[in-house]
Amino acid sequence: MRDTKYWIALEQEEGIGPAHLRSLHDVLQARGLSIIDIFELTPEEIKSEFSIGDTMIKAVTRAREMMPAIEKDYLDLLDAGIETLLFFEEGYPERLIGNLQNSIPPILYCLGNKGILQERGAAILGDRYISEKGNLIAHLAAREFSRHGIPVISGLARGAELTAHFSALENNGKTIAIIPFGMMHLKIPELIREVFDSARGVIISPFYPTREFSVYNAYNRNRIICALSYAVFIVESPEEGGIFEAGKSAQKVSVPLFVTEYSEYPESAAGNRKLLDEFDAQPVRGRMENNILAPNLDTLIGIVKFAD
Image (cartoon, rainbow, N blue to C red; front, top):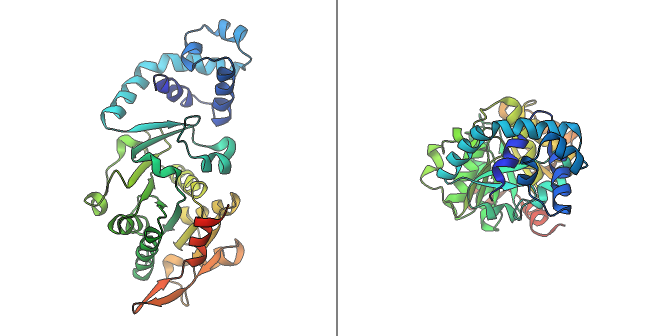
């Protein structure tokens, strides 16, 4: 869209959050106007013409000054084949809006088939230093999701996340990878590079294209993964850190949480028992399939496929 870069510029302004942007969009839509129209006005004209606060007026003024740099980054995105989804556009996941309300990421930067965001997916998460047994569980879980037409949602870190994406793609499934940094820093990991199919996969960033990785971004990314999912399966979680917090996020947004139950927990799954005992997670136990102890995901799959 012609006005996308203006929304990107405004979203970058300090003190402007999703609620401010949604409110501005409502004001403009009610009057049949575009954000470009407000960028062409002086602060005095904005104040006299629109019922918006001083915070937004100052933000528009600052954003206008940043437009040359924003436009350059935006053109770089387009050259790289990266698309945007604004919070009010058709195709923006209603699941995110319903679960996050005024804390949604206003802009999603997408590489691949963004139509997958409309499908009922489930998350597979786990520690990057996952045990050998946990890695097999992640692989088998993603394969099972793919057999039932359920896209795998995860991050793009080594361990359970990459294993899940690889397994889904290898088994003709679909994947959604959400990254904790801007798209300009994206390098598709070697493990999935050869199997990644832009028709069956999409990589998403909710962050400005040049934003670098941070722990805060990773925690926020995990919250978005949970909010987008219809169920969350944590294969292995330490007792603290991003994966454990993701389990808590799933509970906060009322997304069904499933956690591997081990007879003996490896160190990389030290937090599993706590998630099961204190955060209302449902245990995922094993069952024999072709002489392999596979995770029993029947309840999770039923919820994703059929629950409201």
